[in-house]
Image (cartoon, rainbow, N blue to C red; front, side, top):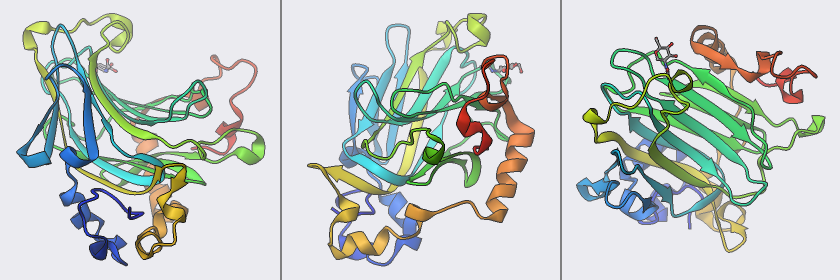
Length: 294
Ligand SMILES: *[C@@H]1O[C@H](CO)[C@@H](O)[C@H](O)[C@H]1NC(C)=O
């Protein structure tokens, strides 16, 4: 298995030395090959020969899917188009997670809203079963009008959430200050569309309007430049030529000055909640990583 994988069907020849062609690889991502529908009793559908996946939610059930591969580090892109119209009460979750009671998790969650009111993009990072690291944002576009790319860069030094190439959150490895960092438990990609009108909408004030059901979220252009974990080994540690050629930059990628400025611009203008400034919530002092995490 190549280190840079979006689909096992891509000949490794194509990958060799061509990590810059991640866009070309992305277009080849195939939901039939890379994902399994895990619940929803027919409400999740893979369409157009694997190029499109849709999740549906109605009054009786939501739906979801997960990646076949487990990854230990990666740069993972997915394009999502969220539930349009009156989506209040619906939540589209898109995340990486490991298993067990001390799991690691990297979350994007999209909280729907009344027509014309903005979605909230909710993010969180769990390490060894501990989360409580929420940051929430508005977006600078209508995420229901078209597909947009939501990316997770996860390497041993940092986790960076990006939207259409703009970094929106960085969670740095603060192990030197005693904060566990996700780096030894392989994770799968998961996504689901479900009803959360008991909390997502201003504490349950607005209820899901089931006359608008079914609600639909759509996915396309999955791409993972990632280390695939299988049988206790990482594809990035193998000596095959394809793993050394394409794992290049992302494994040690950091935010350059321009990216840091964009991150600051985004957070200054679009951040609506940051656990790192919630002194009421942490009367004993803010979490340790807050001194190094933007
Ligand atoms: C919905 O829109 C309202 C009004 O703009 C806003 O206050 C709220 O944060 C939005 N999101 C959710 C999930 O309620």
